[in-house]
Length: 255
Ligand code: MF3
Ligand code: CO
Ligand code: CO
Image (cartoon, rainbow, N blue to C red; front, top):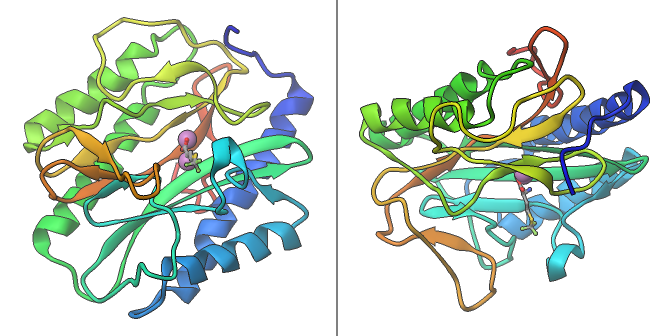
């Protein structure tokens, strides 16, 4: 295995796929309203990705049959879109999209909500988004991958939440899940060092309560908090540049 250093041509391909993934998250915003099913949103996501000449990477991945993961409230990740999961006023949920465009992968997710949400839900979302930003700021040549998780976990513990350690970020671009595993809770100066041309995700899952998760027997995918409390997640695909980072999935010029 080993961490793949991408060529300039590969980076341009990953950048284009990542921008499509980011634009998919932007597009779906307009379809979110009280009463829609996660299956309905998944179908629109699939159509948009195909209309743009790409395919959803999750389709057929390890037996997964949907074009996105949609994870409401206490679902930590890998929520399987279903006509039986209806989104309603007060819900918070993550939508995670991975595209394959001309063979290159882009992977990103963000939180959405419907109507008015509780203060505790909003605070969890804000802290999770900020933890990703802190992680991204640790991306520069020569830094240790462990410092991403070190900085995220330090901030999240200070906020009184917990970091999910059973799922990680990952190298991405030529394949869906490449080396290295990017931990969201890690020891300072641990793990491999970053080099220009590496591309990977940072995707912290942050729980309001206990960090542990449990996968539904029913579908073998949907991972929930063990205590039924809320969970939030944001994800970007990042490139290590000569001087720092480029957030390849950032279509809002947030970074
Ligand atoms: N997009 C997810 C990630 O961030 C992976 C989803 S795999 C699936 O790594 F099979 F659950 F869709
Ligand atoms: Co990912
Ligand atoms: Co993802």
